[in-house]
Amino acid sequence: MTQTERHSFEAEVSRLLHLMVHSVYSNKDIFLRELISNAADACEKLRYLAIAEPQLAGEGGFAITLSADKEKKTLVVADNGIGMSHDELKDNLGTIARSGTRAFLENLADKGEGQALIGQFGVGFYSAFMVADRVRVVSRRAGSDEAWAWESGGAGTFDLTPVDLAEAPARGTIVELHLNDSSLAYAEEHTLERIVHEYSAHVPVPIRLDKGEETRELADGSALWVKPKSAVTADEYKEFYHHVAMAWDEPALTLHYRAEGRQEYNVLLFVPREKPFDLFDPSRKGRVKLYVRRVFITDEAEILPAWLRFVRGVIDSEDLPLNMSREMLQKNPVIETIAKGVTGRVLGELSKLAETDAELFQKVWSSFGAVIKEGLYEAPERRDELFKVVRFKTTTSGDGWRSLADVVKDFKENQTAIYYALGEDEKQVLASPHLEGYAARGLEVLILTDPVDAFWVRTALGFEGKPFKSVTQGEADLDGVKPLDEDKADEPGAEVAGLVATLKEALKDDVADVRTSVRLATSPVCLVASDFGLDRMTEKLVARQEG
Ligand code: ADP
Ligand code: MG
Image 1 (cartoon, protein in one colour):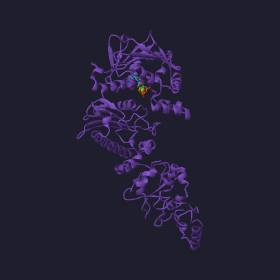
Image 2 (spheres, rainbow, N blue to C red):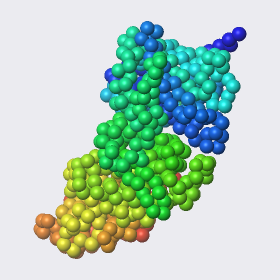
Image 3 (cartoon, helix red, strand yellow):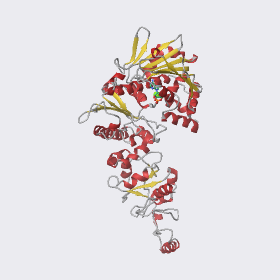
Image 4 (spheres, rainbow, N blue to C red):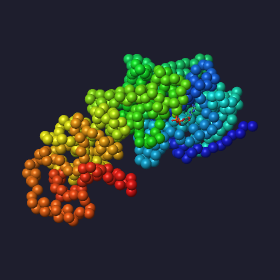
C-alpha cells in the first residue's frame, strides 16, 4: 500500500550532487554545520508561527538532536521545527533555492576556480552526500496529519513515500545519513562534539546528543547577541558570524552593542572582508536578521539601506510587538528609528576603522566600496558621513587609495576644485588626453569608474567647500595653477587664434565652440562637454541607454 513516487532532481542539483559525491571539499565536517543550520532555521520558523498559533508548537520547546549508530553506520540529525509537507520536500530538496549556490555553480562553470573557492561556500542540504551514500529525510509539517519520507542515493532521482504517523515525529524533520565507508568517523560522539563546538556552538536552538539512556547538551542555544561584550570571545564572534552570514572569512568589523533610550535593541553585526559573488545580484537574500525579544522574525525586512547590503548579523528589538506580520514591518517607525541608529553606527565604525587600521579598511573598501558609494547618491543626508569613508583611485595615488581629505590637503596653490575623470576603467581614464594639462601641473584627479559615480558626483555640492569638477567638461580653469615645467606654458600666439577661427568655421555644424585650452599638454585637440550639459561620460551612458 505504499505509493512511492520517483522524481528527478533539477539538472543543477544533479551537477551539485556529483560534486559532493566526488568530494571537491577537503573539509567534509561542514555537512553537519549545514544540517544543523537548516534544523535551527526550521525551529526558528515555527517559533515565529507559534506566536499566532501556539498549538502548532505545543509544550517542551525546541531542540536539535543528534544520534549516531556505529554498527548501523548512521547519523541522524532531528529537529522539532516547522517540518516539510510533501510539496516542500519535493521543491526544497529537489531544486536549488539559494542564490548563493547558483552563483557558486556559475562561478565553477565560468572560471574553473571552484577548487580554490569551494571552501568559502556553504552548499546546504546537498552537502550531506559528501559523507553519505544514502540520505533519508522523514518530515511532518507542524499541524499536519501527513508525514513523508524523501530518500535518495544522490544520483539523478529521489523517492517520496508516505510515512505512517506512528513512525513519524510529532512535528519536524529527521535527516538520516547512511555514512559512506570513508566517513564512519561521523558516527563517533567525540567527532560530533568537536564539530558542533567548532561550527555551531551559538546556533540559537539547543543541540543535544542522544546517547540512548541519556542526552547530553552540546550547545545551549542561548542568544550570543544579548550577552555582554566582555563575556564573548573573538572565536565565538567569528563562529557566530559564519553561522549567521553563511560566509567563511574572518569578519573585518564586529559591532556588538545594546541601544537604550527611545528604542531598546541589541545589535550584533559584521562587516565581512571578502566580497560574495552575488553582491550585485538584485535577488540576493539573507540580509540582517530581525529578532524580537529573541524570536527570529525575518531576514527580509531590509532594515539597513541597500548600500550596506554586505553587512550581516542580528538586530533584536525589545519594543516591537511579537505578533506583527512581516508585511507590517515596512514603514514601521520603530524599525525606521533602529535603521537610522544602526546605519549611523556602522558608518561611524567604518570611519574609525579607516583611521585605526588603514590596511584592513582598504581591504573592506576594495570589496564593498562600489556598494557604499551608492549611498552618496541614495542617501544625500548621509553624504557628509560617507565622504569621511569613501576612498578613491586618483591620477597620483598609484596602488593606494585616497580620501577626499587627503586630496584637499594636497591641493596645489590656487587650486579651487576637486577634479574628477569618469571612465569605464582606470587604464582608459589614465590614457585620456583631457588629463594632460592636469598632469603637467601636478594636479590630482579622482578616477571614477563605478557605475554610480556619474550620478552622485553631479549632485554633490562639494567637500569642505570645494566643488567637484569634471576634467572633460567646460572650460578648464587651470590658469591659476602653475605648470611644474614653466617653459611649456607659452601663451598661444596669433597663429593659434587664426587656426581656431578656421576650425570654428569648418566645424560650425558639429561643435558648439572651439577654444584654446590649458587642458592639453602634448595632444593637439580633444572633445569636451559644455559647462552646463552632461559630462562626456554621462553623455555616453545616456547614449548607451537610449541606443
Ligand atoms: P538553505 O538553507 O540555504 O535554504 P539548503 O539546501 O540548506 O538551503 O536547504 C534547502 C531548503 O530545504 C531550506 O530552505 C528549507 O526550506 C528546506 N529544509 C532543509 N532542511 C530542513 C529542515 N530540517 N526542516 C525544514 N526545512 C528544511
Ligand atoms: Mg541551509
